Image (tube, rainbow, N blue to C red; front, side, top):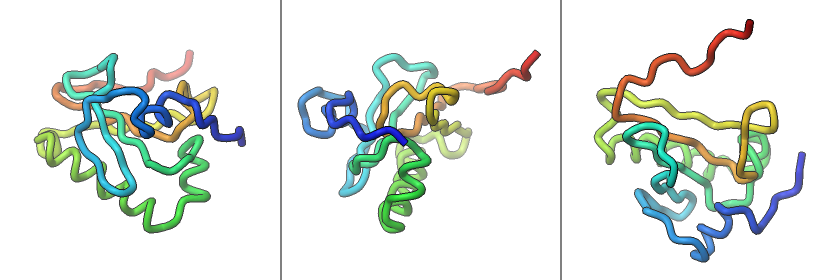
Length: 122
């Protein structure tokens, strides 16, 4: 597993060095609008702890932090009014999973019918 880069963009957002359009914040979680949205609602949800990926987060975060993170995702969907019509959450992990920022994060997409996510390989 790669080492955590304390200068990644999400770490800098958490330190307040880079502004964000905040949607939600508590002791363990920060959520904000993506600057390049892929759907009418596109929010990034990140833990405040230094976790490289979902694999890192699930293996090393305390149970309290994992529970707080998952509860926050549901609360954010309800707060945004997208829980009932539906939404998608996505976590890219590692090179093959398309992870671009080495800080664990979920994308929450909503606001329209989203269609298929993965096309079968040829």
